[in-house]
Structure formats: structure tokens, C-alpha cells
Length: 442
Image (tube, rainbow, N blue to C red):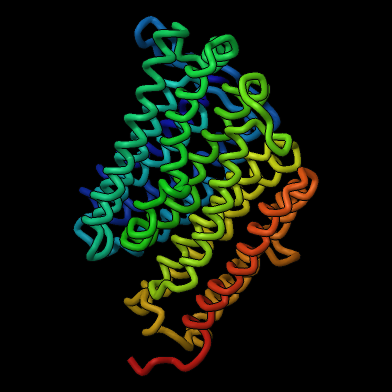
């Protein structure tokens, strides 16, 4: 049974290779292979419902066994990401229908899904690092197939990705030589008795890589242009999947490898949180407020969603950094919720661009009669984005608000509430500019 865990990872990769080979026969053959192998992971994941596998050893490197595993969190995210990849894959087939890059895009897309599974299943620091960097490399190539400024976006993305990669690699190499292992459990055991400077330096090195991928300020610089200029199907993945991979790894490292108890032992507590977690709370709060108000003034529909996505990542970081059961629950739930409603928003905007050929709000309007299903979808998604009841965005944000109240942090609570109010302004502007008003003659 454990071997099938590796097969889940390899399924989309194998499917991508078959689709690429099938393109020599006919485009329909390619598409069928591509879609079949996007659906298969659902059935393969089913057997892992309510099951935990800590270690399945699949390879030996430098005398150390690399391992995969699955738990409730990685199972849930794998299932959600599989659905997003399936829908984005269908979108990609339309988006690249007449493109010369379509075969290569399908191959890269399939490899990307396999790498995402690899990160979710990794149970050692070398495995996660390898798969994490494969994700960055594939995203780099996919971005280049986008809009006019896509090559500038590529350059900015790879620059920041390399900063994150080098930061994490330094921590991986250092911990391997100190702990003598790549395994999460062994690394955690070493850190529990390591000197305070080593704990803090390695934690910061890892977190820099994770927060760059999650586009948390001030490490967000690559995100607005990349989200806006990437192909629309890839923008969905950047916001709903790749960003969440960074936040997932942040969660694993904070709570499973380093541990809040370790931070509590080596540094003072501020508002019931270790100092370093309190600093991360403020980074999350500033990401919320700046991302929200920059989103309001954008004219490019995808840039609005990009800045919105940055702001919503701030909520997740804020919730997780609180370290309380309620805060962590809110942060984890917001990872899932944001993947859903932001995915919908990017799909709708991508559909509008596909139909109209523009993402500039000043050139849009009145599409409610032409695209009523897209209008209803966006309406539901913006209600969720703004955190308005009864949709899912309200539930996760409410948990974070309640956790802040319990921690007696009124200033952070005020910022989080202000961000929610501001998000209503940009999402209303988005739906009004695209679907309401007069339909332009062109």
C-alpha cells in the first residue's frame, strides 16, 4: 500500500509524458491522456482517508534514507490541490489551444503537480527542498508563456526564488552535518538541544524561503507582476496551490520540527507568544493592510487579485503565528478557503480575458448579460473574500479574529478588521467594473 504513495506522485508525471508522446498522433489523444492522469490521483488518494503513514523510504542519498508520508493535513491539501489542477488543466487546454507551446505547457503542468505532491508527502528536509525547487523551476518556464511582460516576470520570479533556495539550502546542509540526518524527527531532536543562535538562524533561513513563495511582505516583490503576466491557468496555480505550499511548509516547520515549546524556552513571550512568533504576527498584519489598500488602486484585474492574494496570505500567517489552537485552526482553514475562493476569482477573470482579450478594468463592463454564470461565481467568491457571512471566508477569518480577542491583542485585531473592510472595496470594484454598467461597444 505504501508504494502507492510514490505512485500518486509519479502519476501526473507519467501522464504528462504520455500526453507529450501522444501529441505526435493527434491533439485529441494528447488531451485524453492529460485529463485521465489528472483525474487518477483522486482515486489513488482515496485509500489514505483517515490514515497516517509516517515514513515510506524510497531512496538513499549520502547514506541517509529519504522518506515520504501522509497525514490528515497533507491528505486534505492533496485532495484539494488535485481538484484545482484538474480544473486548471481543462482551462489550460483552451488557453493554449492554438499555441505552439501547448505540448510543452502540458508536460510542465503535469510535472508541477507531481512536484507539489512531493512537497506535501516529504518527510525529510532534502526531499522537501528538491521538490520545492522543482516547483520553482517549472513555474519559471510556465510564466514565460504568458503576456507581454512575462519575461520580466520570469526574471523577477527566478531572482527571488534563488534567494529563497540559497537560504533554505544553507539551512539544509548545516542541519545535515550537525544532526547527521535529513529526517524531520532527527532534525527536531537535534534542535531541541541546539544552542539558541543555531535554532534562530536555521529557522529564519527556512522561513525566508517559505515566505517568499507565500508572497509575504517584504518578500512579495515578485508576486504582483508574476500573477498578472503569467498564463491565466498558471495564475490560478500560483495563488491557490504554490502559495499554499509555502504556508504548509511554514506550518510543518513551526509546529512539528522546531516547535513552539522550543521557542518558548529560548526567548521571552509577548502576548502569550514567543518573541519571534510575535514578530511574524506583525509581518502578517502589515501584509494584510498594505496588500489590501494597494489592491484597491489597481486597474489590471489580475493585479487586483495578486495584491488581494498577498493580503489574504497575511491572514494565514497571522493566524498560524498566534500559536493558539483557535489561531492555528483559523490559519489552516483559511489556507483551504483561500485556495477555493481565490481559485474561482482567477478562473472567472481568466474566462473574461479569454472572451474579451483584455484584463484592463477601464475596457470592461456590462458582461453580466454575456457571462451570467461567471458573474454569479465571482459574486459568491468576492463575498467569501471579504469575509462576509455565511460563506467560507467568514468562518476562517472569524476564528482568527476570535483568537486575537482571546490573546488580548486589540491593535492586531483592528488591523485585521480594517483589512476585511478594505477587501470589500476592491472586490466590489472588480465585479462592478467587469460585469455591471454599460457594455463597451468594442
